[in-house]
Image (cartoon, rainbow, N blue to C red; front, side, top):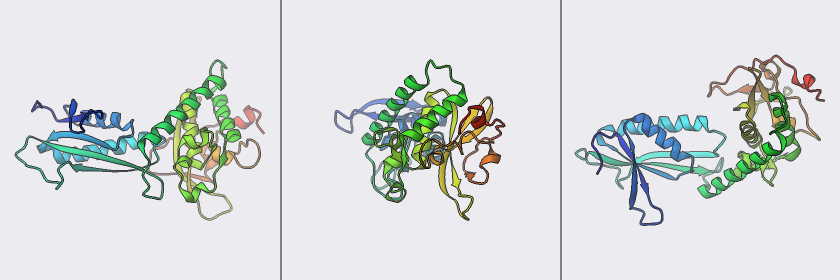
Length: 296
């Protein structure tokens, strides 16, 4: 029996039995609990998340779920391809009885290929994520652990690993393969992707290596061209200062290049402009790591 004092319940069903068989209720006593439940559930790439909420709190619940999703997606941009989501009442006609104490609300999520309406099965995304995680752990075990590396040296290891391993998939810019936009594309045996894949792969390896790193989106512009294009790269905190690193643009031509390796905002301003959608740190780094690490 649902207790009247509860703000909402997450309805958990047993997939092995009838789909309407409720096996447990996860209680949310306030909006913060509701947000926490949504974020925990999103880790598993759900297509639907069902809640039973107090009727008097329907609009508040819709607003809180939208806010919680926005916050979660900002914190986990490297995890997902494109997501389309919606929040609705469970009733087929979208109506409810105001006299009822609780009403069923459903959060729906679709994972779609960029630029299309083609839906990606959650099982495929989970398998891609698991494979990328395994490769990242193997990289850390072989290249990072026990080697007493500085943070700059760790960033160098990751840069060189990605540049030597992968190739930019020019065809993927217009054909919208999901693999080109997630870490799996670069890290798997596929070994190709667009800038998102490079930057998301760097972010995953950086986190596993103990670096403080941020996935960055914005505009990348050739200094000789008038217009920029959508682009993704990373920022890394080294010795208390922030630097930018663009493994995509370091992977131009043969071998590793370091034109965009741990650079300050002043170094990057002619070619890279960060999006204003997120509150990125200032790239205030003052060291020349290309010279310090004797890179060519």
